Image (cartoon, rainbow, N blue to C red; front, side, top):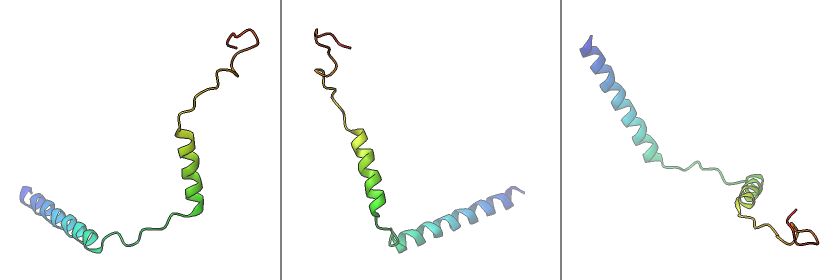
Length: 67
């Protein structure tokens, strides 16, 4: 039973190695170009990540107190 299990593990190991060799051998040739919608979404995300400094003059009332 243990011998059969070891045989299957070795077979799985060689199958995974062959799959990795196939992927590396072919390279990443089927990469899709970024479409305009993806660019727009990426720009929105980047814009939301920028640190925003609040305008303190707008947060104060006429007496100079924060509202």
